Length: 284
Image 1 (cartoon, rainbow, N blue to C red):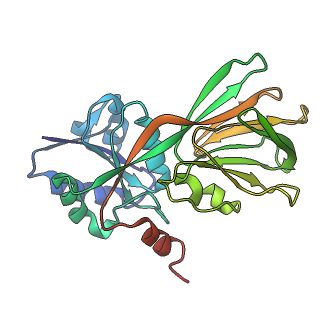
Image 2: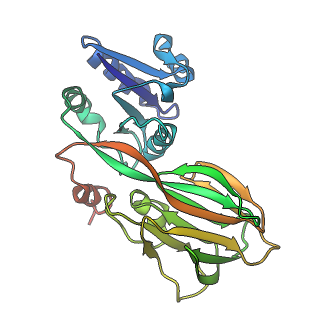
């Protein structure tokens, strides 16, 4: 029997119809569908509801929404790796490999095992205290962003990689992005596009008030340290744009590449460069 975890986005108007199609597809198959209990109640499917879904073994998980929905599910499964497949109900959908008009065909492939799983690295965020103590903040698939805590105020930041101080500059912040996240916020800030299977990650400044700093690609084993130069200012840290943490002026934000991996389901006929062409340059 297949066990499938389903995570529907409540805010998407087409979610109910996609759920109906999924239910119909699996109705005559040896499969168990489960959803977070609160979502199952909201979609009038109480029999599918379970508690602590991320701790229940599953063959794969279906994400019904945009890339943001899929990112959140991957973080939920960080400690219990279950491969996740995205059904695109957003605008771009870089990470989702199923479009709505091909749903049943792709579900058939999932049932027959006709897919592969890409292991994408998590970023791990920490706050390092002046005493040297590290406080773990959480994991991110796309990016960990250190940015100004006050509206319309540029901040002075210091940046180091490993034990080497690199620079001090005034900016709105820094984006530390994984290869998966290179097409997200980092791209908007002028960072390069990286194939998600490249081993490394990105440092991209946000609106730096200087012309001599550029995005930097570093190794997976490197550690990034960002701190405030001016103690009168304030910064915050965001994980995938979904979790936010305030940082004290004398703290240092540390970002490392985690040993944990998120499993993203991909199909053989979906090529990364084809995705770039159709999602980014479809009107060129």
